[in-house]
Amino acid sequence: MSTSVHLVALAGPGANPVDDVRQMLALHFMVNAFRAGAVVAVLGAVIGWYMVLRRQSFVGHTLAVVSFPGAAAALWLGVSVTAGYFAGSIAAALVIALVPRSPAGRPGSQESAVIGTVQAFALATGALFVSLYGGFLDSVTGLLFGSFLGVSDGQVAALAVVAVVVLATMALLGRPLFFATVDRNVAVARGVPERALSVAFLLVLGCTAAEVSQITGALLVFALLVMPAAAAQQLTARPVLGLCLAVALGLAVVWLALAVAFYSTWPVGFFVSSVGFAVYLAAVAVRLVRDRTRRVAVPGAGRVGAAAPGMAVT
Amino acid sequence: MADVTPATPSGASSSGASSSDAGPAVRFEDATARLGGRDIWSHVDLSIGAGTFVAVLGPNGSGKSTLIKAILGVLPLASGRVEVLGRPPGESGADIGYLPQRRSFDPSMRVRGVDVVRLGFDGDRWGVPLPWGAARRARNARVDEVIDLVGAGAYAHRPIGEVSGGEQQRLLIAQALVRNPRLLLLDEPLDSLDLPNQGAVATLIADISRRFGITVLIVAHDVNPIASALDGVVYVARGRAVSGSPDEVITTETLSALYGTPIEVLTTSDGRRVVVGQPDASSHHAGAHGHRHDLP
Image (cartoon, rainbow over all chains, first blue to last red; front, side):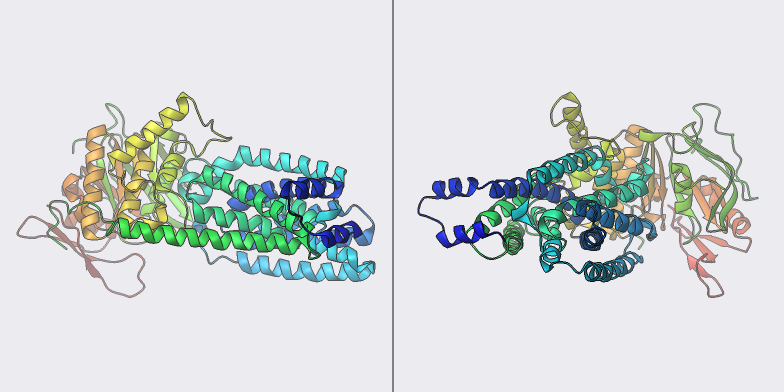
């Protein structure tokens, strides 16, 4: 955390919110934080929406966590930390893609056990690389908990490029992937390459996790992947609306958290997760209230048709 | 009735007999399917006439779903040939509507019934659909049309996991119909439904088949709910299959030859038939137990 943040924090929010915003945006590191936050929020929300729908949250968490040993190894070897994040997540995505799944996509495959094993091993190797590196503790904290407030212009540009590539890929694959997720057997019968799409999605998820990790840290990626998407799916079952809502919630969570953190000495990641959690709780509450009112409005909904003729024999 | 090829007691029905006019919708020639090194069925010859309503019957594990998958081209044959709508399997695209065997959607699946039907229309296409334009309107009109056809309008906009089994089945039939197929493959659509719903869904399928001249192949555990609409029967058992009209196939002679063990078909006083002595393909215990196929 830089000194400037502490100085501002001591000043505290003033009476005029417009002045506060102006004051905040006068600082270049805050502008970059908002920019980078916007990129990772949009990316996390879109990919997260598919991840939650596909019930692959555990996979997403693992791909995020394994970016840590990748980045730690990069630090130790003295190569680009960005490359380390991507190498870790993509390698893990490929390993998970190799796990055979049960036919018809039913639960009961080895997938979660294998993923858990990969995650445990990855964390252990991350600890090893950190120990081999023997450097400053700050770097390790940055890998795990992010560096929202130290993003350079170059990093923002690089983030934007990766985000555009990932989102373009999703624009191309999104519809058949949705089909294969919701209705696998019919999609396969219609010629959708379900297996290839699953692998492609794991790679996209890995790239997203690696990218978001650089800003939020390996442990808090998950907040941006799962929270806006899960909240959006509580609020609507419409796919396009759900995606847009996830993006809006993601942006709101990140920007609000940054604004609050600006006036606090507490870490940004804490506010991102807390705001995200609050949004999710609110979404669940809205859904519960809505479900209850509908059940009262339409009593006995769910019955169909009358008996057909010729049904005497049972 | 005339479109379905007659069965022969040898277990292999004649092929080609019905291919004179429009040609059969589905034709198997000396076909063998293998899964995990085991022959599911072998040397199957059968043909399904265009526009007929045909039930695929047989004990559990006999390979009824495998037959459907071979027609879809999802499972390649180990040997022999299958021809679907005059083409190799897997090449008929929108001409085939498919409803796979399944229990139901996960109750927490946050996707609406109308989305599932729409996926049946264009879910296999790459890229992002334009949110406006004539193609979009035509798609939405067609989706609404089939939802009305199956009578699912009241609940099509609710999450599909939250509607009843019968309602889900209607939405899935709408999905299978949305691209105007010539051949409808329904794998146990009545399974897991209660009796009134079985009757209602069966009536709906038979009605659609007649109104639009669609060939329907329906895998069923119990022939009773669909019996009145049937043009033909494919009976799969003991690694073989026979086809023909219900009167020809569900007889003591044909089924005994198929099973290779004495099977008795009894006719009750009200004209229904009961199959007795049919061994269950998947059971490990010795002996046989009765299995009813009541026909009017």
